Image (cartoon, rainbow, N blue to C red; front, top):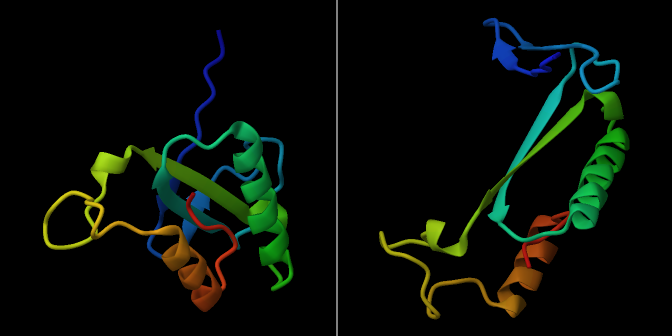
Length: 112
């Protein structure tokens, strides 16, 4: 049985990662995108997100093979939006505030 593992490290100057893991050809210009989000998106939505991130980064000169995306899914009770407490109807994002935030920040994708 062959066990495949992937790890990322730091050597003091730059990120160190396997150059061909996953069937790609990475350079020294790796970009890591980590997103924490509510659990529940479909695989199709996630694949579209990965592709969109890679495509947008290519427009500023980042090769798609150098883009690593990590989604960290959590349940809604694992968020605190301030005040040291859990989300409540008064302090959690509402759909209108998500749209406004997305426009202001130029986000690729906003949480549902």
